[in-house]
Image (cartoon, rainbow over all chains, first blue to last red):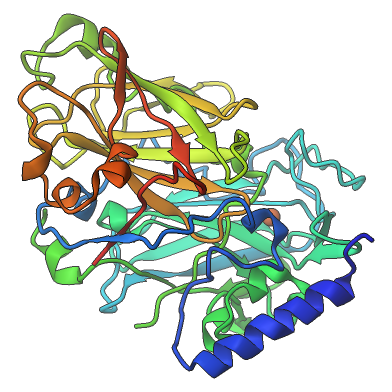
Length: 250
Length: 197
Ligand SMILES: [Fe+2]
């Protein structure tokens, strides 16, 4: 029998209950999260080996420069001759470390579906229209306050094949570099109030409700530009090893 | 502050994250001529292998990132190695002279990957971060290179691993300056994955 949303929702509820009972806060998703079926054969079963070495190369990280990122890259609506279809938005926020310090001059990359929920990717078979004026890729470097800003359109929800009638809530994929390779983060930003949140095993893989909320941007009216775009704010905090080690510049 | 949770890279990063010559960490110009900062042994090494899942099947949509010191041991990387297409503004590959220490390669449909680099200075390993659809949180590992004079017992990580587990982190020489390194996300040959504290 093909899996239904009911099956998946039951599994999500079971994992949520188990998390509450365990009473230990987990900020990240477990790598083996059964409701997300693709995780089954793609997570290690051995525990991670902890490295506590002040000389570890992972406490340093790559740097990116002005030819890696140009001033055109943060505007996803300006990469083609015409304007893309959809609701124009700006997404802005700060990238911080766990001590609240800004992460400066680091690469932020985003990618997303178009307003119809279709990726400009050959393997995306969702029969929704491609938009010749929208590719859905953006990059920028954080400024001195750790700030980033993208102009784009609000992506559409899209179906996938985890189970029958599976839909992803609208989201923007984010890739972030910290000052250390060990601070690397790839994640997804969601939009407030999306009715699909409860049904989505990828968002629900973050079993801690407060942590899940940190993946949802805030609509901020003051960021909206009259007659032009709606504004969202989303701050990002990079996890990683003790900041003092990174500070020492290893 | 509480961290932002990780989420999977998903299946459709392919048009966003990989860039032309992402696996060419060894600058083409320097690797051939041996000028600074490549040092005395400036010839490139090739590392290739496959990424497998717990059923032993190839993973066709994994993304590997590599970070390493320069041959002189410096860990500062270098900004701005990418060239831009004047017409489209898109990436047009590396400039061929800058050693950034950073590489990014996606696996092919058969789960294979390859990259070329210069031997890291000061340590016998390259740092690797693995992303894939199905992987809700990336995985760190290391590729150790069996270079002359390297003693595994003096490495803080390898010294603490039993021989079977240690083996999963050591690249196998398969030809002159060519090494093979497979990543097993799960199973009997599961790669050792790392957590940094
Ligand atoms: Fe997506």
